[in-house]
Length: 325
Image (cartoon, rainbow, N blue to C red; front, side, top):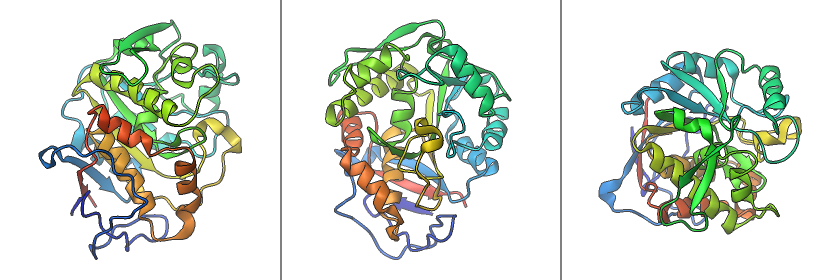
């Protein structure tokens, strides 16, 4: 089934925990929907979708987009603070990683203090959260490397964990959710802050005073652009819309319980399209369970992430949604 961004369907078939798109019953152009600056229609992206969140469907979606994933592969995901309740299921990630030759999970240390602020503490947290089935490379364990940002909003270069240059390809495997500062955490947040070194790169993005609003989101876009430019065609993006808390996995055990049901998995080679599609699914959900997450997104100017990526020509908000179910 193909659904276009311009003619996004009513999600009348969303039921229970599956978030099923059952039929095309009309089109929605919600005034609340984010619309990033459009690239020409010829540049429309493809976003693949499954309503089922499990290893089989995750792998099937990845196989639709992985033709340029070669060599040594970094899998970037949020491994969470201790006992974080909403992180991606370890068994699903384990089965996924096992299908990708020469791959490792990658992470970076945090800027804020706590259980992931040093490599030693971080490794204890990784073990406690069950990330023990494959190598986990803490990218900034041995310092930083600077990636340039072409036509930057604010940052001419961003300090990344130095180990990132050891990889030929990058998979952004993202738990899509809300975020206390960015409004939402999608593929952009996962790579832009998640690959920036803990003490230098993350400080560049957040600032000494932990800025919020457009400047923060534009700095995130700068960082994300640097990573996308570095990897070129050798980067793909997967958003898992599961346990859709208003809080990031960095909130740990105190993260708010999800109100929305699980919606499914989205996958694309286009970072803007995959984040746009996730936002569209939330805004077009027919029930009131979406209210808290939308309030979190809008109160933090989160939709600026999408328009900033469009200005950076990182992708397109026009997409075809193709379900594999």
